[in-house]
Structure formats: structure tokens, C-alpha cells
Image 1 (spheres, rainbow, N blue to C red):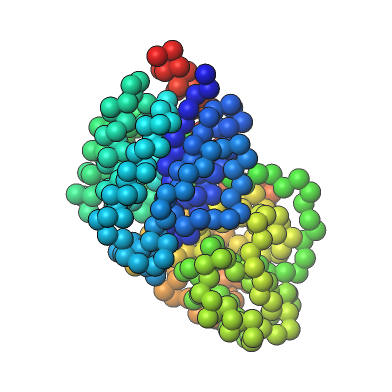
Image 2 (tube, rainbow, N blue to C red; image 1 turned 30 degrees about the vertical axis):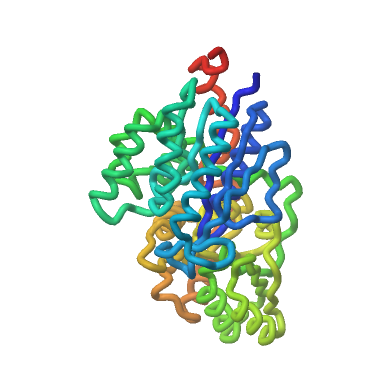
Length: 384
């Protein structure tokens, strides 16, 4: 009997959570774990899952750039009937698959608006025989809870339901307590895995006089890209400027940029192998999402980071600060961004030395898979 792992992921604003979950699922499959990846976000056609089972729940995303309103795949606010249907589909797959271990991505350190299905999922795990182990899959830095009450809710859920917490980061680079000061109360359960993703570039391309401007999947990247265009019009720095637009980049902004772009300023779609694309550039200008920072670490490219801070979000700013402290980037606060300040930061970043060694441990997919397999084997669940 192969060990069975049920991996739940919900991506809302971009696809970072989904891509990290897919990396974890593939790594577990390599160790001959039977993995079912259950996704609750919008479908992503380029998802590479190899032999991993995949379940698409009725999709949910956010309206605009806030998490206050959840909408379905047609753009309609979700209602109680939708919630009930999604919960029932999720629990049906859990019970039919009968996993030995359940892994929830990001929860219980976020996804509070999905408690209508996540709390029933936790309760259903208690009723399965044998009861599966319950692990949390958490990125390096979470969005810091805005109140003690919320922090205590995270702690209560983690302590009462979870057997382990896999933190996909490096304690020496960005400890979990940087964003969650109560992490010390969970220490026996916390396992740092290293960063997930960022496979080594086999053939390193020659660096050119080229600047890559990007904004992750794109929904929140309009101001950064428009500021880059304005900066280019002031000074090109003697380089080609290559804007890479994610699938969710605002279409009206993309259309205008393509119409206005001239000379050595170009606009194109983001490439699947972003780390290799960065490795051929002299400089990267981007936000500070998890996957982007991992790609920067692997490529070794000099960087300017403009962390997203809309609606007072702090996660990207903390990550950018860690990379700047390690001497691997120049960071600018989004609220103070201007063409002149961006040019000054770019000029400063270009003086930084090139460093090929990542500033943090990688290999998080393989380490996570090994921890999951060891936990199932040790618990003796295959014998029950």
C-alpha cells in the first residue's frame, strides 16, 4: 500500500500558493507517495503535476485586490448554497481517498474566510479510521495577524489539530517569529524545510545589458510597471528594458503599455522558466513575492524590490528587508515609489557584486516530502 497524502491549497490573488503546492506534490510523488492535490482557486492551465492526482473544487477568487469579497469563477459573490456545495465536494474526496496524512497549505495561519469548509475538514479528519496525521504547509513569512485575538486563533487551531508545521523557509534568513511573534509557542511542531522551488539552472546564459521588470502573476503590479515606463523615459541606463506581464496583469494597462512602448523598452508575457530568464539579465525590478525571491536567489541577479503593501500588507516588505539585509537587493517602499527613486535604486543595485550562492537554503520540496514520508512510516498508519 502506498502512503496517501491529501494536499489542500487555495490561491486567491495570484498563483504562488498553487505553484508551491504543486512543487510539494511532485516531490512527494518522487518518494512514491500517492498524492491528491485539491485546489480551490481559479484553474491554471500550465500546472505541471506529472503523476499527481488533481481535484478542482468549484473555484473561488477575490474581487479586485482585497480579500474582503470572495467570488466564484463567473465573478459572482459566493452564497451559502455555493459554500455548502464546495464543502461537500471537499469532504467527499477526503473520505473516498482516506489519506494517511492531510496537508493544508497556508491554513491555519490564514484563509479565515474559508472556515466554512476548512473547519469541517479538520473535524472530518478526526472521524476517519485511522485518523490521518495533520500537517500545515506555511511559507517563510505570513501576513502578521493584526490583533492578539487573531494570533491566538492561529495558535489554538495549530495546537488543537495539527501534528506538525512545515515552514518553507530558512530560520537563519527569515524565522517564522519575524511575522508571527507567537511562533515560539509552537516550536516542537515547527520544521524548517528550506525554500520550495528554484531548481538549479543547468546551463547559465550569458548576462546581457538587460533589465527585467516583473510583478508576479500581475494583479497588483500596475503601479510598479507604469513607474518603470516613466523611469525609462527619463533614463534608459544604457540597457534594454523587458517588462514581463503575468496572466492577471490589468489588461487596460497592458494594452496602453504595448501601444506606447518604443526603443529599447519591450512588453511581453511572463515565461514559465522565470529563473532562467532572470539569469540572462543584469538587473531585476520586481515585487517581493515568495516565488519571485526564490527565482532571484537561484539566478543570482542583482535586484530592486518594490514589495506590495496595498491594504497595509506587510509580508512582502518583511521578505524584501531580509534580502536587502543579506546584501542581495535594494528595497523601496511602494508608497514612496517614483520614477526618480526607482532609477536611483536601480543605479545603486547595479553596483552590488554578483553572487551565485543563494542567501538561504533551498531544497524545500524534497525535505518536506521526506518529513511527510517519515511521519507516516513512524506512525504505523499503513498497518492499520
